[in-house]
Image 1 (cartoon, rainbow, N blue to C red):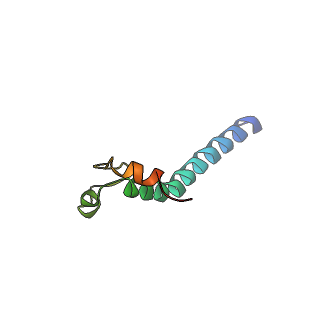
Image 2 (tube, helix red, strand yellow; image 1 turned 90 degrees about the horizontal axis):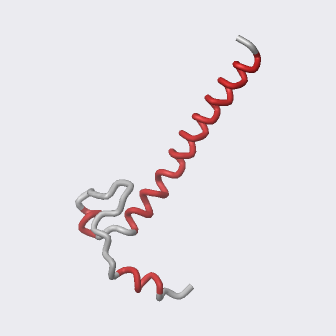
Image 3 (tube, helix red, strand yellow; image 1 turned 90 degrees about the vertical axis):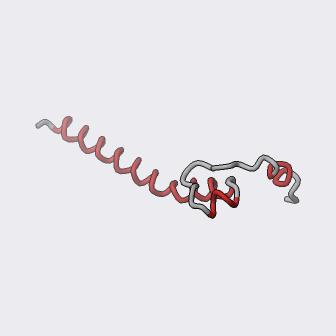
Length: 68
């Protein structure tokens, strides 16, 4: 196996490991965002994973009017 092939394999494995690490680090933040956008009923029944469930549209004006 030439050095070029070994280098290509090493780089490919590194990229795969970095992508896996990135997904594992971002997953909790995505989950928190999904919970904050979901209804209380969906949160209480455990229906929320990475996508919001029963998104209450009446919360949007409340978030937009908050003091910064």
